[in-house]
Image 1: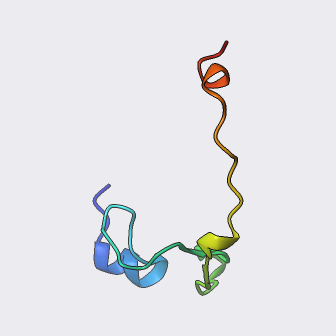
Image 2: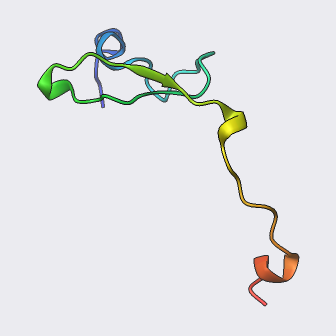
Image 3: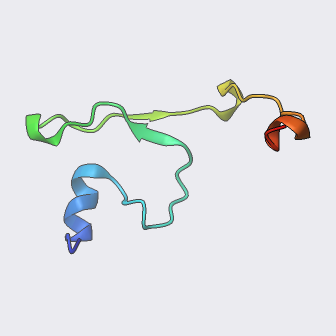
Length: 62
């Protein structure tokens, strides 16, 4: 969209188009209009619950 990446990064952090070594963090207080400072929260992948694999018949819609 033509935004200045340095200015954007200073306020919001790295854009999704830029590779980063930071893993699974997000700004949980995002609202730049109110002047809130970003607060980053790390997501521990060991705490994520994922579904078990479905049987092939369910995946195929049978």
